[in-house]
Length: 140
Image (tube, rainbow, N blue to C red; front, side):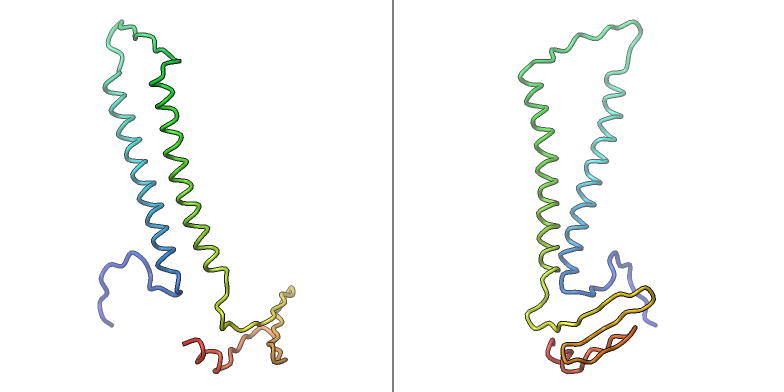
């Protein structure tokens, strides 16, 4: 058995596996980036603004234009990132939901303890699915 190098993702088992892997990588990178950024900022601000003796902090003007811009920016950026995630995921979903043009229709009914399968040609099966060889050779 040949030795395999480290592989992050398994072998692709579908035509859209690369798209799904790309979306997953994007989600992991964005999550890791913001997790590290937030952790760093928490530590940074905890050290920078720690209380020193009897020091009283200056009051902050709640209604300043700079504060409003900051609020808008840190609301718009996550909204934009979320919309990218949604649009990308939705496009993959709609791509994989549409059957190929040369696909074969098979009717399957789920019963409590079995599957009833009927092919378009009329052949029926219970708990097994046999794909005709012509269907396999046509899809290649």
